[in-house]
Image (tube, helix red, strand yellow):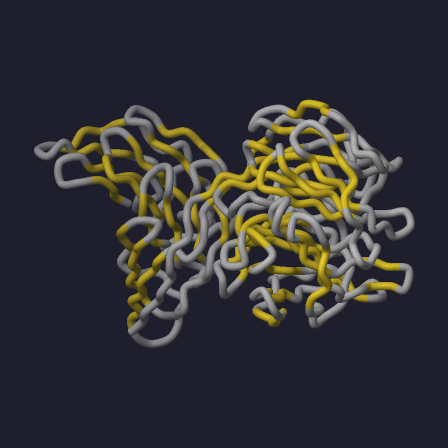
Length: 443
């Protein structure tokens, strides 16, 4: 396999099975350090063979998922592909690469984010044993033999963020079912349990600091706000509270109650323009939706499907998303609904039905993470305004967690939760790239 430019290229592996590596300087080839794992029919990427490249997959002679990075002098083994294969194509650089096609999984596509490989949307037509690929992680092409007759040529354009979760500073008080507000660098965590808590902490992008407590201890409450200096805490249990408190950066003050007391629903917005929906009442799951104008709560049109442990996102009371949750049983749901300021409309579902998840973002760009499927999950999905796509998992699987509600799909925060017990103080920061359009053409 070869990567690089006309004046700085690298060639590695090949027939017979070898780890031999040669460097081209524009005039001559020079033998340099071998791959750690000898192989043939591998993939690779890199824009300068003399300084950086990545090698992945291949046969040795059995299919391998092995991945190695070239630093200009030596190869170093790093995290493997998710799917072992040979005869695959590659594009991109040593820090941002795409692996696609191959045998025996001719449609599989994976993206390298500099640390891990993340599964992506498959090729429309599976290809293997073809002529390799080229391009970048946001625009690549591949030509290869179909499993059936003919030749397939396909174009890839990235359609959702590439990102990774990294460890942040832990909460001082571990908890599940807390409220959350703010952004990745200016977050607020409050209440939670067990036992029911009034504890409040602020996050500055690296560590949590204890500040003044809520007036009413509770868990499973609604929380939202733009920063850690302006937030709202409403509802919660026990048993189904309507109490609302406003945070001004120093103290919590009780303000007007919700119309319907409840817990375990979705919330989003700012301390002056917010929305809550769904949740658990003494009568069971509700579809009730209320908006907050900075002073009062107003009942508006309901969700289409009543549910509890549902998550939400949105910048204010005029635009929001509600996703996941459960209906009586409990039966996990993948249902997603979009709010336009007047009505809820069902849109495309999550890929994995779950409850007790969290999220942050807007109605057109959201990150959903964690939750309970058959056990606590680390699953993360990105919403691009039309579809949900699975991206890199949380490091710590958990349900009943909270997030920075005003975070984005490029900078989110996850904290607290359980798996299944006890509660955790673990905090993770999401860093991702921006979303662009994906198109695929074949012939």
